[in-house]
Image (cartoon, rainbow, N blue to C red; front, side):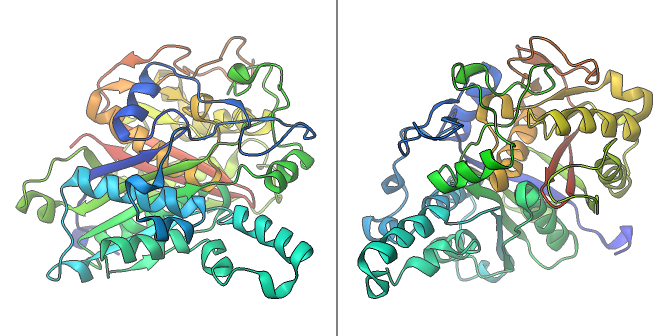
Length: 415
């Protein structure tokens, strides 16, 4: 695709259901106030688990967005995705009708999909027999169903897809949606990520591979990106959705514009199933290629919403990647990890972090990295510790990296 035929893409709506707020306004207020969303697990009895903490979504009622019968036929991850999509459409004041339905699409990523219904139905199968399994098990479980159900409930008949690239899934969804609008294949896209994997088996599995924090005695301070004493990530849940729209289409209907999306790149480490390549070479290439795609120089970058998982391997390697990609300007760039407040939403993280990045540009305020009390010597950038910072943001990046070596960088700028 050559530059001269690319269409410009803007963000006109946002939706967010998170451990620190169930609307975009609540989420943003939580971010800039440094609210902690992590506590003891209540979704199940975690007393026998090595990890007993998570960032659960609180006080979410899917019936605010869906009919009772529909709620019963959706796994929690799809409830989050469809509800956040409806928020985003309402925020964008974008009405889908017979005239535009085929030009509006959906891409919503999820790393795991409906693992809760899978675990529940496995119990039914073992205890009551094969003929007692729910006929809705498969359509509730499969990861593409958040995207499919969003189309069903909004009427969007355009391109529809689901990205499943572990913790990069939400960002891949946004990037792929961006490309479709750039190329003229859609006028608008509902895109982002959702996840609801705080379940017995999922928590046990992540704990077994030593990815989680075991700071069970102090959940509020367990997620501490870039801190010397970090010991693993804390699982979160929820959804983050953007409405991306072709610029002229947005202007023609008088839409509010939060910012412009200008770049996207993805790379692979081709190194290890869970660990990033030492030095963050793959992540650095993703940042460099995204900036090249956007026509942005490193010196123009104001803010980076980091992947920042609070794992020993990620934070130091991401720091190295940022320094490789931005050179000396890395030390002049604000970097923060909003996972310090929400926990890690896995496939949903890219969605809520893109929302955070866009809102930071629109509100000229950088969310903090909380719990950064003893910075790691290998993590020596400006991580905006503890308190949000008022700052005009011209260009911002959002990084997402996933098991399997997936690396994604999104580039947004002030419109």
